[in-house]
Length: 217
Ligand SMILES: [Zn+2]
Image (cartoon, rainbow, N blue to C red; front, side, top):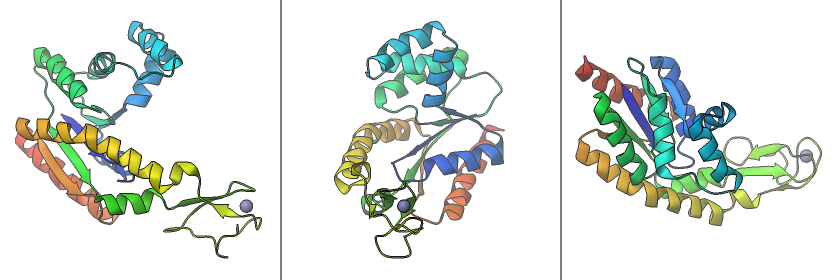
């Protein structure tokens, strides 16, 4: 069984991937992990990818898809995280799986309204002096904008600013909308409300996967 989990920055995708991997024994495959393994192993694909990475360029879609497809062994359940990232990768993956009689069983989007994503992505603060990390939603400094540990100024980094967050969300949407349309047409798309409490999100995800597994049997 192959499940793809999609989710905007801030959607809790990383956390939910881990929950699902441990609940169902999915092998969790993230593109970052695969890149590192292929490059460290100096495989032909790894070396090709390294040429791009070392130049600070994006690894071409066909190399990424080939790497991921090469990792998918028969009889193993996979949870793909961060892949496919765009329509080209998705189409390439379908092409590579077809000769082996494999296909994607479920594509689940952790849906999060833009306002909530922004609120989460811009909530991090950091002490300018000692680096202690805070979060205005879950771990605010006790004394307004001063660090609990050292009294330094607690500030927002540029990476966590609203402008940066908006840009990240826009890129995600641009890449993901065609993916959603593609997998919807394939009849494997589902979405789960990612704005709910994490435990409820996990339960909803489990319901989708249970239903998919029942069909597969
Ligand atoms: Zn501090």
